[in-house]
Image (tube, rainbow, N blue to C red; front, side, top):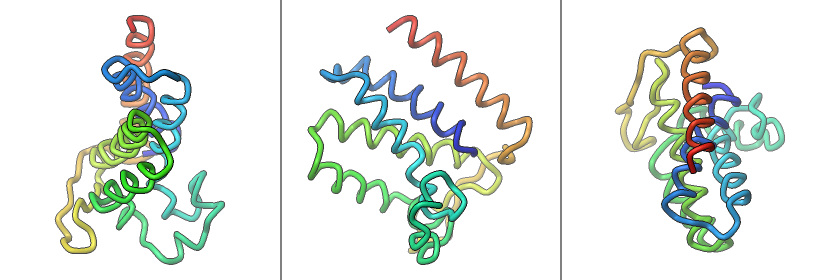
Length: 149
């Protein structure tokens, strides 16, 4: 999926996090969720985050480690060192939203990389009309959710 779609997924799921976790700073919660929704693409040299840390893309294949369950555990551990519990959940919500979105694409994700080549793949091609429809649907539901918080 593209950057904007990942941000929208992070925003949408972050709204559910706000509803159930009641963070004291809702804006910070959403910012963390949205930032982490883009974070897995740090392994792509042309991504919004990856282009600033090209060494990661040099060392890791795209949709490899950073798109696996192991990266989710690493994010949980690293954010636990610096953020309060509720904001760690914001990071996890955002990161997992990225993986869920990429799992809907034909390229998919390798959940247990590098220990297994098992991949979850969907039917959407990145950057196509299918992704645009997903983006618009999630956007509409986000606005609905935002109005009904």
